Structure formats: C-alpha cells, structure tokens
Length: 312
Image 1 (spheres, rainbow, N blue to C red):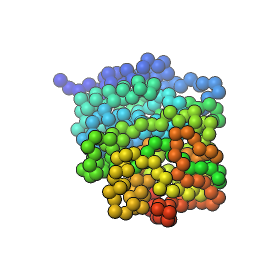
Image 2: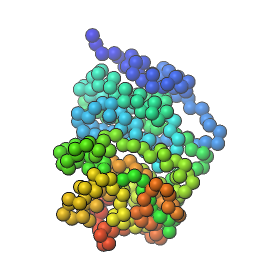
Image 3: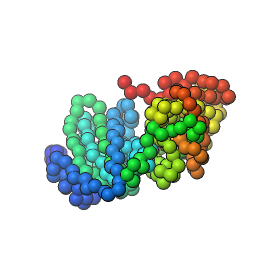
Image 4: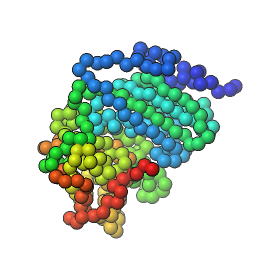
C-alpha cells in the first residue's frame, strides 16, 4: 500500500492541528485569514531547523517537531507576546517516510495543545538533502507594548532567566561527553522550555529583551547594538544548574569554561535589561554608555570570541 499523497497527508496529519479554527479554512486554501484583535499588535517570528545543524541525525521525529515549536515560542517569550498560531513548511528527505511524518505530526499535536496553538497553513515539499523545517509563529501583544531589542538605557541592569550553558552541554552530552546520567542536559538541548511565564514581568519592567539561542554573550550583544549602549557582563554571576556547576568545577581553566557556557547557545532563556531587578531573573551585568560587550571572569577581562553561534 502506497503512502498517502500530499493532500491526504495534509488532511490526515495537519488538519487536526488547526483545532477547528475557522481562520485556517480547513487547510483547503492557499492562505489563512487572521481576524484583527482591537487594541492588539500581531507579532510574527520565524525559525528554521536543519538536520545535522540544529538537531542530531536520529533524533525522534516527535522531539524534532516539539523543538521546532519551542524555539519559535522562545522568540515570542522574549517579545512578551501571547502565542496564537503558526505556519509550517517541511522539506522531507526520502528517509523520512509516512511513519516518521506521523510521529512528527504527533509532536506538533502535543505542543499545540500544551501551548494553545493553531496551525494556520504552510507547505510540504521533498528534498534530496537533510530534513529541513521552517515555522512562522504568530502572537499578540497589547498595541505598542512589544518588548524590543532596542530600548536599553545606560544604567540599566542586565538580567537573564533560568540557567545558562545547559543547552551546549546537552549537545556535548549527546556526543558522549560530559556524562549525563539523569538525562537532564540532553533534555535541555532537545526540548527547551520557552519562558512564556515571564510575559507580564517583561511588559511591566523590561526595557529590552532577546531570547538566548545563539549564546548569551552574542544575544546580549544584539540588545546592545539595537539600543546603542555598551554591555558589561560578569560571568562569575552566571546562573548555573547543578549539572553545569559540576561540569564547571571539573574544568582546569574556570574562566575559559565560563566563556564556553556563556557562548554555547541553545538555552532558550531570556536576557533583558531594566532599571530595577526583576523577580526570578539573575542580574549578570549592566548597560553603559558606549558600544560593545565587555566580559569578565574571575574579576578579569576575558575574550569571549564571537560570543556565540555565527550563521554563515
């Protein structure tokens, strides 16, 4: 029995993900119609994942789908936006057959229900190359209230949510080192937790924000450049999980190890600025007049290199 054709796949795998929303038009059209919400701005963001670049070959299709959703939700979290729906584009290699596509759709279903998301449309194609996925996420903020990267002022505190370095260590653990006996680090890499819980606090207290995807130093630098300020970061104040703390204690060069944690990426936390501390976030530095990012570890200036992942 042959696999379902493109239109059957859309009907069977993706139409249920619209959750009956009328704006999706049952995925029978080439577009969706999104009604306006008075007093609200529609916020859009897009992230793509490529096998071998953003996730390892052999990763469960369901986990790939959920990571795709969550890295996009992380962008909305940094904008203090309420998630709404998404557009999906998939480029399937020959190795990704009907069972794998079913598992992928199940991952989308799980997180669609968890985060209240509606699939609004998209496209599906084939490719001779690696599995390539793209998702455009939509969310809402009160008009004029989206938290931008621009907005930091000299004298603001620099803060970050959660813990930093787990994503990079999780990728390393997936490759065999460091040890990860309870799977915590791997879970942080494969299934990030978007910080949507910070929405109200960011709207009320943050002057600028960015999600930590490429690396804390690099992403903080995005805020500095957009805002026209310099940033000073003290890596000795970096919030670490117990697993990352144990790894750090075993390293012969603490300063260099801290730089690795602060530039490794895949944490999907939120780095932000504000005039006063925000509950639940860790103060790691400050904004100053000028330009660039100054990084200290062990009380000394240190070179963070590029600061994080650089896309060619």
